Image 1 (spheres, each protein chain N blue to C red):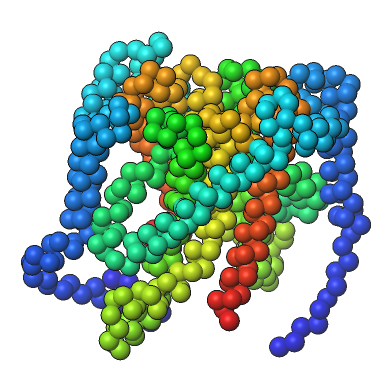
Image 2 (cartoon, helix red, strand yellow):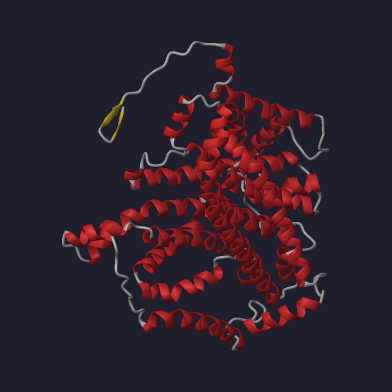
Length: 264
Length: 279
């Protein structure tokens, strides 16, 4: 079947409207601060945020570190915890999906821990690890491991039963079926967890840093509040947003590469 | 008994002999073993103070919770604190859903609304809701509105995204059927778009709810005088681990309760989805 490609001309308004919306958003933001509709103690104008951004690139005042150090700290925590969660969560989930013994032993503990928001672990983390980097990594790790386990587990569960029966008929052992059939068929679901876990990790990173930190983007935000500097708060928020978007893009690229590699 | 295509599948009950190995590898038996050993290890670690004084035994936690239902902490019993958190969640989450779901539906159904809202939404999307806490406190002070605002922001994003995507992933053929049967745009929306988007929409509500719990905790940990997050932080400041663990346990239970509520609502509103989801 061959289709002739039909080119639908996009109405001009549809290309103009998004640009217009963004422009109005930023101009409006600038104006309500400049004209004093919103007092400057509550919100900083975009130009002020950009100025602070340039200033913070080289200057450690008033919160004790340059922007690069904050960003590097946050990245380090998030990536370490994310990788730890992946390395431990995926095998656990895969095993839980196939072996009854593992599922029987791991599931109750997992179900107890799952509904507790990772942020709630902060006080215990401070008891156990102090306010250093490991406490934060622990919280982000808890946040990240849940989607990895669930997706790998569900992925194994979605294996086509016909394949398993066929392998059984040909005398494959349980372990062979697990490694040769279940794991490959679970992989797309596992990749699906990459993005979800990343979003969870990044959200909880900010939470962990708001409370217990001396460096990091979340710390920058909470220092901005304590010093009543709205431009610093907004700068921190923007950096967190950009950082999250960048890691998201990298993971997205990796995911596409891996999926293409598996299909081949 | 279920049917797949034109085959009839009859459930076959296999008589299993009761053997030692059979019992040991029984899933439900292992659940009990796991649960009991979890509690036992917890008790042992706390009792032997392997982690210093930072862990309370399970029994101490239960005792502390029982005590809190009787006595007041900062003017509220345990029930009062549970209600304080739940109320914030309910208000913020409802606001987020009431604004996010229709906006998402509108964006998916009308490309002009989409062209205006989507770029601005995309600016805010990658920002974790917790990052809003500081600015919310600058705007609204440390009272209730700032907490509700954060929960609102947190639950708005998944609600909007899922209702938007829920409509966009609808099979085009479903629309063709309506058109062939002589339906107009209104029929398309009411008969196809809405029912087909409901499952995705409810998935969005579930995500929103779990994010809302994270947000309320973060907000209460930063500044509050009531609520479950406050109980935890109070326990930390007084170095009373039984209070921290008790607070965590209650949060887990209440969060699970609200999740069950939404999935119950989903089963009630979209019965056609029953049985599709295995887990």
